Length: 113
Length: 117
Image (cartoon, rainbow over all chains, first blue to last red; front, side):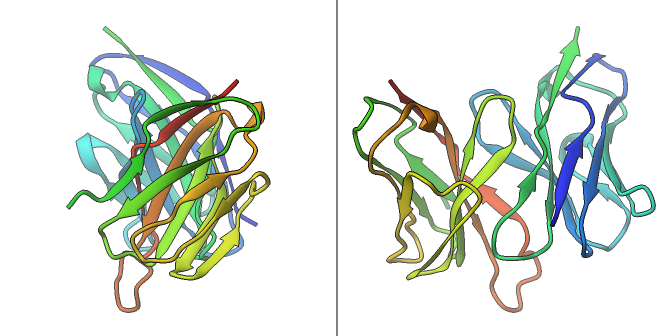
């Protein structure tokens, strides 16, 4: 069975400083891994996706994530935070089956001015 | 293209009432999903469908029913609303078509915020 652990429920950074959101996963297969972002009272938007091609994945809005199989991690980073990045971020795993995605509990990113 | 649309955006129900949450997609995707999101939690799968006429239970199906008569529509029915069903409900689609590379990515609607009092 697949599972996802987001290591921080809340992360607070100052505007202009780097962002690191941590995610570990467990899967019996070679999974697809995703990061989704949810702004307040909005739906979920895909940030980026890993599917066994390049281990460093670039997404929208300057975010990127690195897949590390040996550490079973898929951490999300951004070099310089912007106020508009304040949102809830979900790490998600899929083993490709029909029964959907497995979500982490989310990390709330707070950007300090 | 509108993508995935959900109606209503907000609803307040009394205990024991029934309602249907609507989900429509114009992406011609075979796979459709219903999730619920509780405060401080990720999304949990309620039901899913791999095509018209085919549905299956997810992790938390109790208290809900679904049907899939067309590719475009996947309504979620609450028969006897309970306070435990207070949540935000998201519909999602996924390609899953033979020969299409991006079959894992799910695309989400804007959500329906339901309160049961």
